[in-house]
Length: 281
Image (tube, rainbow, N blue to C red; front, side, top):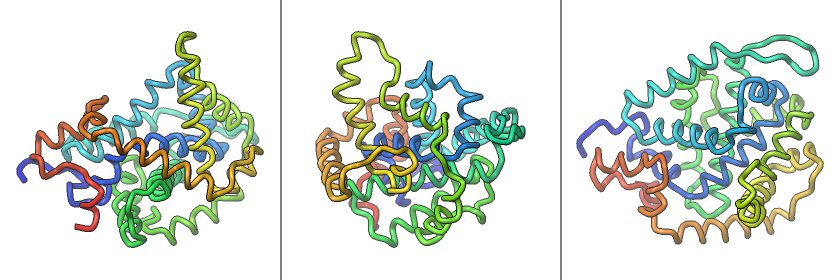
């Protein structure tokens, strides 16, 4: 295999996992979870136009994940430097104390990172993507790389499931569903769209949003104040959705922007194609 394999390489768990279509559901779960940290979500509210440009924000996030996973080392490092530069320039005001703080606060960056990586891992495993516990730990360890890209010290980032669980126990008392979290919840259920697309939003988007919400941990349901189906029901729905989406040919799915996987295969050869069976190799 010739060419620069990037930061993760085709031998990584990340390379295989991030090619799965359930990443979109996992991404929405991550937004729900991230919004429960009052300072983190306030930083988004004060510095983002996500309510007017929802699709653009989702695509920028997908582009960053795709670039850091499947891009060249130079492209990934450049993407990380751009994110760090933006974060250094932004601040927000604590909704309770009035204190001004930077959005590049390591505690906030760590929360956003852990909520995101936990959501990717949780949704994919629960929807039927084959990962052993050891491979799940390897995935978390690999993402100390992506944590470094956004400005975190890799040594301070959970590198296995036990560390991640301990982190969530530690941060749990800080979480709350305040006005900002409620606004994110309402937005995710009813994102602005063209009037002609409202029926599609009601039929398709809301089902995905409800599924992402249902897959949250119980404490998140408690904070938001909205119940979720029984865990076994949620797992069945996740597996059914995963099975359905994985029936769509991968090359067809990968034609959607930003096409990082196809570019990586063109750069490295067909052997770089992501596939679940390669995780254990």
